[in-house]
Amino acid sequence: MKDSGKRLAVTLLPLLIGVLAFFLVIGPRALNPQNIAWLGSGDPATHYLGWVFFRQSPWTFPIGLNPTYGLELSNGIIFSDSNPLLAFLFKPFASLLPEPFQYFGIWFLACFVLQAWFAWKLVGLITPSVGIRAASTVLFLFVPPMIMRMTVHLSLGGHFLILASLYLSLNPLLRRRRLAWGALLAAAALIHAYFLAMVALIWIADLAAKYFKQKLTLRAVGIELALLFLLVSFCCWQAAYFTVGGTVRFRMASVCTAPIC
Image 1 (cartoon, helix red, strand yellow):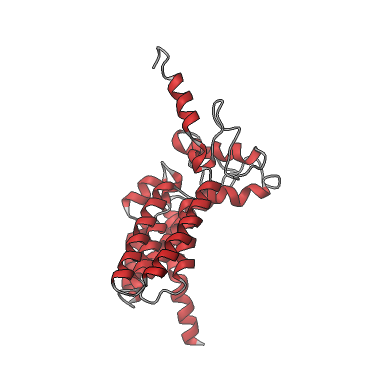
Image 2 (tube, rainbow, N blue to C red):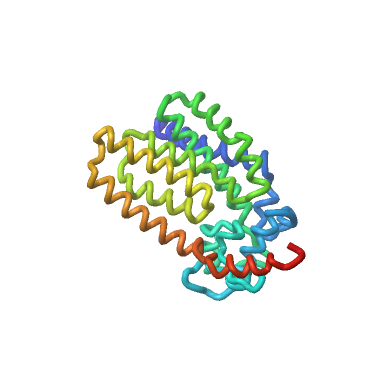
């Protein structure tokens, strides 16, 4: 019983560290889904407005289309940086949610908790020391790039995606790698294109390393590349990455021929 209690405490420690870091950096008010005062200007306002229009728009296919958002042009939830992953999660309950409603405070809490969790797991590949893992987790939680991006571009707080990709690539005992990498790449695609690019590069580097070390056959590499490419393409399609095409560029170019441009 004592050993199981100790293991439970060690398991919960990184999660507790992540929650404490969230309250220190962001504060509890962001968790109120009806508090939109902190989203009132700059890019956060754009992120929130994208969600508001998406919430009120009819269902479409692909589901990430945001037809009422934008000036005379259809748009996609990905282009307002409104975190399609959470937008897709909450839209089915739009009629039940209060007005106003924002999920970015919940997103920040998830970012801190998952950053702590994957930092803990990543450092655990090097040392079993609880003290070193805890100290390293705290350092990962207060890295300036994450904190600085969080308050400006809300979706870019998801640095845990990078730590998760490093953990998957460095873990020698990883099982069901296609499932793990597929879930991570899909999540990155539905959060932000920047994270998708970074996670995809680490995945491809890991795939190449496994092949050259003869841990994966050429056939296995080809199958994984094809399957996960199709998965990511589907996620990008549903998040409306491909809604801005040649017609839109032509129309925008026509507008910019006016004397004011």
